[in-house]
Image (cartoon, rainbow, N blue to C red; front, side, top):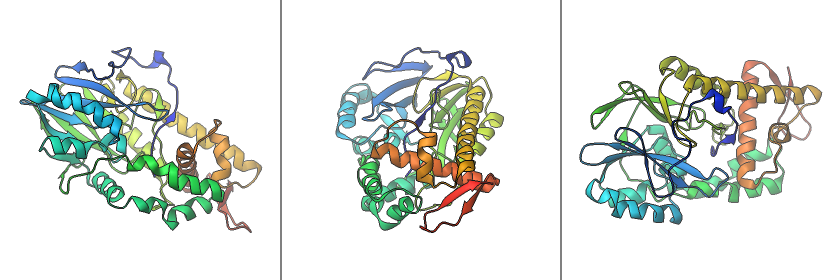
Length: 353
């Protein structure tokens, strides 16, 4: 499964940050007239997720929800009893299926009888995990890791504890409001164009307000980190990196350079096109590392992990690292930069073309 971002620095000189620090826990910052920014804690190395409240007349439209774990639901309760008591939620827009963005939706929808807006692929992906969490430990997941060189014990840990965060949800409604690229959503006095992009998740939703030069970019473009771009076990030959690079290039064309980016993590910033170029260069660099490693000898996806990720990884991080390395391998196979090699042990390996 896809998950949390990898860490990638950006020079502060390249981007402009209108707010030098995030809002204190439980508080909001008005990042534009009628748009409030808040952070909720995450129990990972990436320790927060951004959520946004958009003025919607009699209440607030919410973009993303945080996890569905007990700590996050406790953090929501003062908001339910406070700022949302007189001006309740009017709708919830979940940008993608990862639990830090939709995990608390079930809890909130039990408090507020409002629609959930999602892209179809994202809703169905989230619903599938919620209804059948045991599938994350199924045989095809184990085979996915083993056939690309991960040892049996690490595979066991990845498919058990490594996938645990995907279950941190509070449920989903049986119905939802589908949104599609090209739609226009009216929230209060604003109109938001719906854009979608692949790579980090299948059909991640982004919102652009042309009139006020605002861009809610979810996890697609963030100031300090690169979103995790991973091959998944149900689509082992997929090309998520190709989809992600295609999305970045589309954003550079379709979204003006002077928008204020309201991302899913890190600080809001100006400099969308600069950051998109940095992210493209980041992935090209990773491809170069893999190509160099495969010039010396054929290597499996698991054997390539230390050439791309130098830090010691726990099972949660190992699963993401493995799947992200494989995303680069699949992309490079399509580009003709790598070629598959037949091996006696049956483990898939590649060499430089």
